[in-house]
Length: 259
Ligand SMILES: C[S@@+](CC[C@H](N)C(=O)[O-])C[C@H]1O[C@@H](n2cnc3c(N)ncnc32)[C@H](O)[C@@H]1O
Image (cartoon, rainbow, N blue to C red; front, side, top):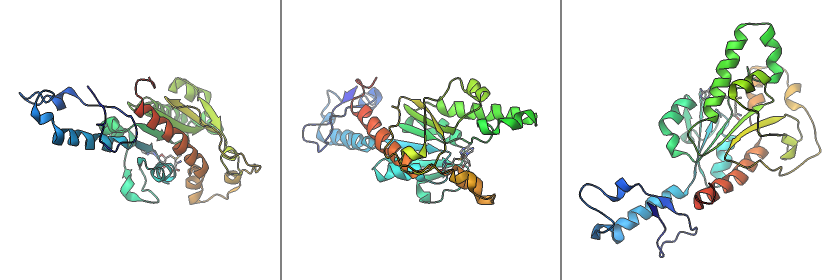
């Protein structure tokens, strides 16, 4: 059934939320007709509804915390998950396998943003496929991991990767929905970044700047280089939190219209 916030509640949106029938008919008691379904019980339902008001976001395959913290700064209940430790705010990070976490807890999340490894999927790495046979298996494993993220049972999903090799796209089943550049979001750099979207609008550029430097390519080889290469752009993270955060909040406030 659908429960609306009561007239006296301080809720500022007209969001309705679903309450399962089992919650309302516990044992022999039918709460809808019972005095139990009176003020205190409705308060419990209302508090539960308020808690659900905060949309929950998982940022999979993120050690930097950049996207996670952009959502947290806007009031979303965001966590990150990566095989590595996070670089900041470990209380909002799960160190482990993102697919395992999603298998167990997908029902909790409204939105997932995922940055799976591109090592074997990227167009720029495709020359190795013809030099080392085992690379084909790595490519297929990577693409299957990507596809499982994209097909997770979460209402809104964005999966990010650089320009992808054609065969990897075949395994995934489709091409990206859009490609963006850091220079469209306030960073004077080029790095074509592709987004596969489920139930999300295209990301709009927020701050087109003049610079077109290839900073990452110029970095000297080092242990930190691959980490630095994969660290996400704050300007894009802020655009995601702003635009997609508003979108999922709106979708949850008006579930029928957004279907
Ligand atoms: C391309 S990097 C993305 C980094 C991200 N853009 C950031 O700013 O932190 C890919 C990340 O995926 C993580 N990863 C790989 N397999 C994973 C898995 N099964 N579960 C969770 N994270 C995974 C790696 O540890 C790595 O940090």
